[in-house]
Image (cartoon, rainbow, N blue to C red; front, side, top):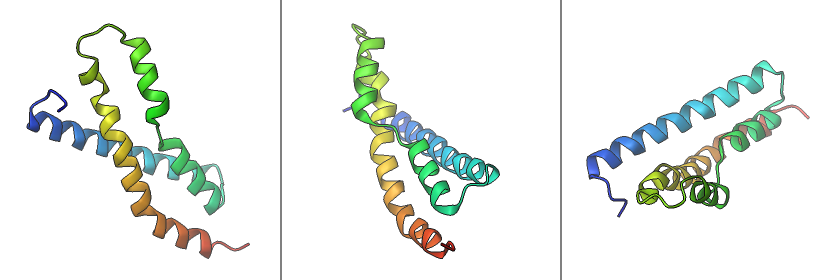
Length: 104
């Protein structure tokens, strides 16, 4: 397990999900303000909000090396990674439609 009570884990998941949703919205809005076309906005939105375990875990390991609570400190990233994959896959059909509707 993560070493945290279920209620705390649920709260953390809700926080991470809310933060991810707000970053998706913000990236989409900033793309619009910058005058980006739909396909560019989609690219910006998805790439700006995606964080990887491949970068995050080693970075956390270096920054917090030797701390006994390192596993706990990694919990938000371990929740964020599958969440962003799930959200991205759920948004894909809608984003595909938006891209297809854009004039060439």
